[in-house]
Length: 467
Image (cartoon, rainbow, N blue to C red; front, side, top):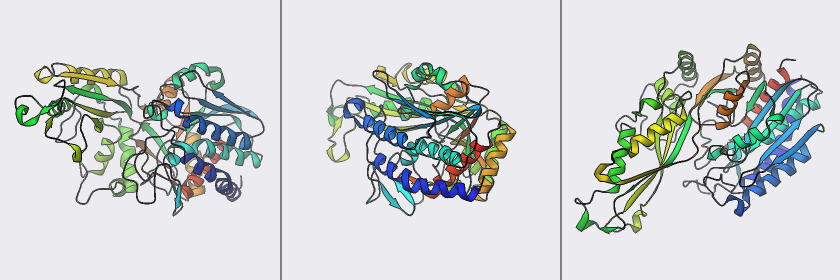
């Protein structure tokens, strides 16, 4: 393979065909079903489906078959089945649903307003994970143009990953014969420690999301006549959260949500920190004198990748400050996001959270907990020698740096499903979400030069798949 020719082909394809379709994709507010219950009626998901399938028909290899699965009441699934001319079965994965808008975008930027600035494409979903379908087909197309012999490749794109992939098990069963038994899984929905080398993710945390609601009255009453006598719903909610988490340290208190961290993952984290140094802290947009929870960088990275952590990500029952009267509110509802370590049982963890929050509520308050679809974490199997060599060689060729691995604190439910179903499969979990890219937050961007090199690395790894 001529490395320069491969990179040149991929760069041109990105400029001519991928960036334009991503610009159109970013404009569509196709929020995942958890954030847009009326997603079907709004039609945004169907617009993205049409955009993606029209593009795929124009750019997929000649021997490929495009199919769309869409069961009633479920988000769609795109499958691009590329016939192989040698043995092997590769599955490539991505998703096309998005997180909600989020406040705080810089002036001139917005979630549905694509902007190219300093070789970064800003807007919701471009990096997480709109590019995956297009980059996957780009990698395959570039290899085929060089006459490379490839195994069978199936590109699978879902539309509900940001909601925990609730529709995916249905399609996994429905499409079991098509999916077969993958030898290699390539996922383009993860992160990068920097933009200087090829990164692969070796573990992912699970996620338990849901609402905690505390009711104390049937309607709001004057705080002057009630406060002190009637317990505040917010104070009770705060007490309940203290059952889950030590508010001083952030440590999650439930044993069901903890695990022993494997020594090899600690060693991997130590190498990760030795490469990035202070960048593991400096990547975050800290407010003025704000500091991390701990000065030890290795422990800090382990806290965000191999330890449970609670975040309150939303609230109801709280009026905006400029419209808040002196009223003791009847209820407080908090949206909780609990990240759990990779090898923790998400079902047992959810049950422990529910029991902890609802048993013996203070003052007999009405406490209700409603959960979203829980997602298990994932820990990669031992990497085969050929794959470790292929990833390292690709990184050296296209970045002039050795490849590196990291444990991610986010969640990709599909990886846990595949890991359980296909224990013999090898995994390349990678992505463009490097420092500052801010997936799910304001000012999300796709680092275009990195994405081009990442695509070339993926093509190189596909080429090195053993015959």
